[in-house]
Amino acid sequence: MKKFLSSAAMLLTAVGLSACTAKANQVSNEINETETSKNEFMDLKGKKVLVAYFSWSGNTKYAAQYIAKKVGADEFEIVTEKAYPTEYQPCTEVAKAEKEANARPEIKGKVENMDQYDVVFIGVPVWWYTGPMALFTFIESYNFEGKTVIPFCTAYSGPSQTLKDIVKATPKSDHRNGICIVTKEMGGKDMDQNQVRIDKWLGEIGF
Ligand SMILES: Cc1cc2nc3c(=O)[nH]c(=O)nc-3n(C[C@H](O)[C@H](O)[C@H](O)COP(=O)(O)O)c2cc1C
Image (cartoon, rainbow, N blue to C red; front, side):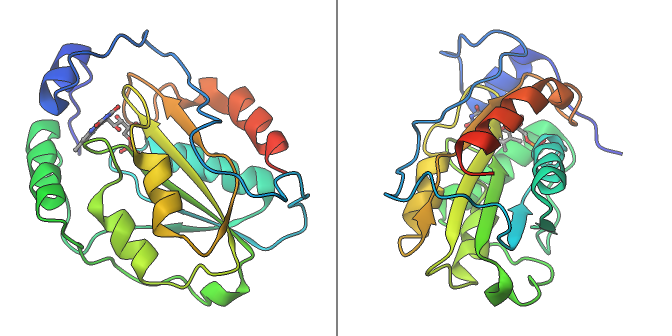
């Protein structure tokens, strides 16, 4: 079973976020973080939707499953072939090394028939100011041209480059504004507090 360092001080030390001033359990709706397309108000109801996500401790998984249930989407969990350490500090070290190497960790399984999806939510935890490198393995494994890509993330302090990096990595897609859910907890412990905010965001982007 995973052991998590839930103490704010340890988290900050581990990821070097000592400048963080966010309040405990604060929820942040970063609706201006991504570029929007001209048809941003087009209704997305009735479209075939996939929610693809990576989650280490469960926060992003909670958000992904909540979104999928709300919009009636299929889900795909991005899981690396090589598991990350279950302890927080070692995990940050592996993640940092992968980021520095611009690695592309291998992913288990494939999305069945990606062509069928009009809309793909892509969600990740913020790892070292962007997504885990498996995010980029995932994006580079498919053709997102012509699809609407909607980024989301969970984080301890904020999205940094994460939402923008998802947009940047899918240049031939339409995009909707993303959301970053900020939480001081891990394991999805306080994620139910974010349901109203997620509902509001889904309404704003066409669901
Ligand atoms: C390896 C690692 C790096 C992290 N880097 C950041 C960061 O740069 N900025 C931030 O706000 N939170 C950072 N965090 C905190 C996570 O983004 C946050 O706890 C997230 O909600 C965890 O999502 P998950 O439960 O889906 O794994 C990091 C966590 C880990 C494990």
